Length: 130
Image 1 (cartoon, rainbow, N blue to C red):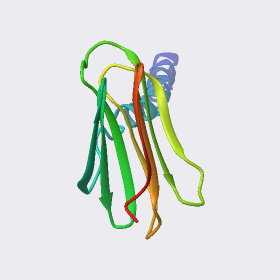
Image 2 (cartoon, helix red, strand yellow):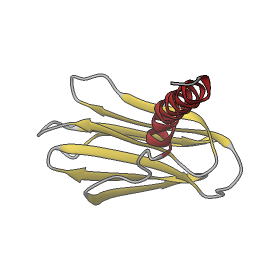
Image 3 (tube, rainbow, N blue to C red):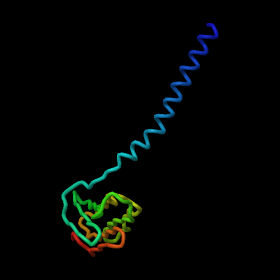
Image 4 (tube, rainbow, N blue to C red):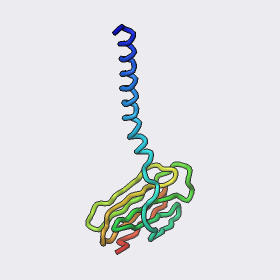
């Protein structure tokens, strides 16, 4: 085999190795970008408040919640929280432009507590869905 053929094989091998490395790095970013933007199940409660609305959904023992602002498009502090009785709350809070959440907990037959906040306005509902 001449040196030209060896160089070509090495070049092809390096190209394949580089491509597989790029795919391995890009795949987690795509999976993260495909995060759910809505809750599964049926909407059971809607709690409007001064700066937004908290939506609560239920499906097969799971409770899910989303907080949406009245004025979407600009980044503002948002929070959504769901807590099943005798369990730790699941919270999503940060500067978002369209919604906080979804957050989901397995409640089974237990009551849940839900909270939502957009900017200075908030809503908090005690033990519901019992």
